[in-house]
Amino acid sequence: MTKTWTGLEINQMYYWQVRKYPPLLESEKDKPKISTWTSIIDIGKIYEDGPLTMSEYLRVEDKYVAAVLAYMNVLQVKDLEVYIINKLKEELFLDNINLYPDCYPPSIIEFYYSLNDGDILTGNHIDHIVRLGMREDIVCQLRNNDKFFVNFAYDFYMDIGSAIICEEAINEIKKIGLFIDLWKWPYPDNVWEKSEDL
Picture 1 (cartoon, one colour):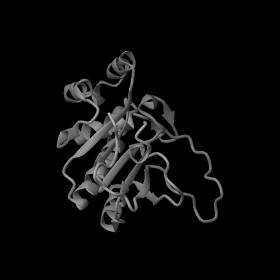
Picture 2 (cartoon, rainbow, N blue to C red):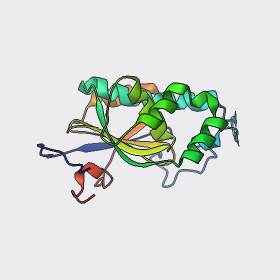
Picture 3 (cartoon, rainbow, N blue to C red):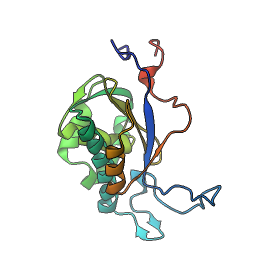
Picture 4 (spheres, one colour):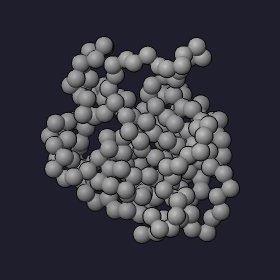
């Protein structure tokens, strides 16, 4: 399936990195290494403020879902197309379901199995795809034409792109409790902007 910005000419896309980690202070060259969790597989491990529970994990994951929905709302984007790059092997996905049952209600499991490349997602399916992307159960990107873009990276980083700099959406994400910074260098990871040979 060829992925291009069909019928659209992209003059400029702006990209932001969204994360739960605070930025460097002006006086810092490198962030001091603090033991913190970066994945769903860290549930049950002990950190400075105690063990990571499923409820705490979901509380933070909720913020990423809210960030995507907040940006979509400000831009008046109602649906997203999914580009599936890879799905986790089924046996590993089933292991996650067994290990973290509170994170995998029947609706998200059903969604995982029914999801196809090129699907147009709305409603609760936006919630599900963000969660599966953050968990790396599905490696994918989302877009709405030339308005809005989402890429799920490793270690609880998420990248958002849009055709305009939308301060209202950026401020909403900060209010949610996440950090968001404009990329200051070329962004190479938007697969839709690459060759038709992909």
